[in-house]
Image (cartoon, rainbow, N blue to C red; front, top):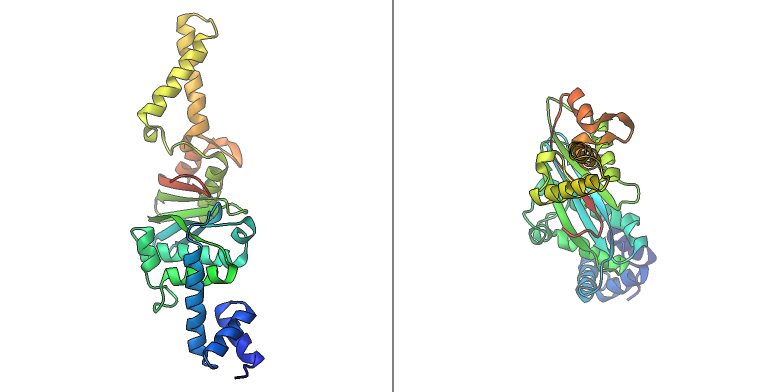
Length: 277
């Protein structure tokens, strides 16, 4: 049967699939639009299944916060190539997955993939991913998801390679302040939020290094101890978030900024594409 160009365009607008695939699906469905949609979705799922073993070395970080509900999430979505990672369709998918994670609280990635979509409960998150896989022809999947609750702020770097979400306590928080602190964390990559969060093993290792460097100066023992203490103080300022000089004003520490705003840091999460969990 003859398939009109209008029907093909309508199907493409609904599915974002290639024009020739839309025409073929409509032909197979004898012009039935809904049946053609299902044919394309099945084809997308088949494409997704065939790409299971392919490497996903690229990706992007996405974040979503609902201030009214006090929930937020960050996700690392992975794909095969850098152009796709920075593309609009993959970006929308990553944002949708972040929103889904924040509002539906999946306990795992497997659970997330099986959840009904927020905007289309008849379909699952995995169906949504399969649609984009079918359109772009690359393997893609969520590699990590992080959900947080409370007073939140976030920042995703302009190239989408790294993102941060922070949780604080207080009466209220300026969203721009929290964004700036998240941007600081993105740039400075602190080891821990506060000194007590540093593992005993890491702390002991750094103390040994400081003592060794101090001893190498050849100074008297009483001075060596002070030199080692100074080196540890410098290390804390470089690696502990609350003690780091703020990137936009190094006359203040991040701890100073939070204290002045009446806020207490609870925790932060920093995700970079490709890092191990």
